[in-house]
Image (cartoon, rainbow, N blue to C red):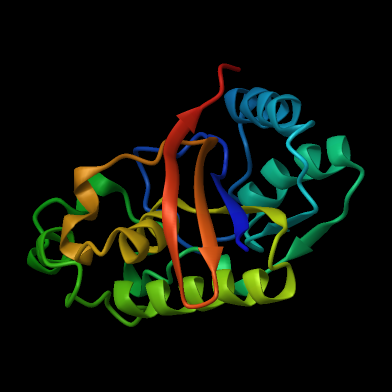
Length: 199
């Protein structure tokens, strides 16, 4: 008896690749992202999904909305899948962080490095894995879609792959991608990673 969690990264916004948005408000989908979200909705419309959960960030909720609408479901906002709190790095351009030794440490020692006044990767992993287990317990044989963020999804996948958080740069989670895990009482396994639906 297993539940299936479909982990969807939010679709593209105009700052992807240039800004560490984190939990900054007002980051919404661009034209490309809206097309990606519509493609996800079309792809998942017959997937037998019973519930749609979303990070509270605008870009995640905007991705979840057409998926839920296509399925005739409501979006359930879920704080456990929200973006990492990057503290003082929130809203900084990646270029401006390039020479920061703490940023370099964050990207090479993710299992132990800290953000400046924010959240650790291990903390984000713990809350997201706990959230996944909570959804499994409530829907032990269900199919649930969760719209979240790249690093949060990577952290959940790393947990079930038994990978150190230092290794999360070894795989990609693209905007609007789908990764799937099967969960049962006490454990789980990765079924697929980074499936991208053409927009």
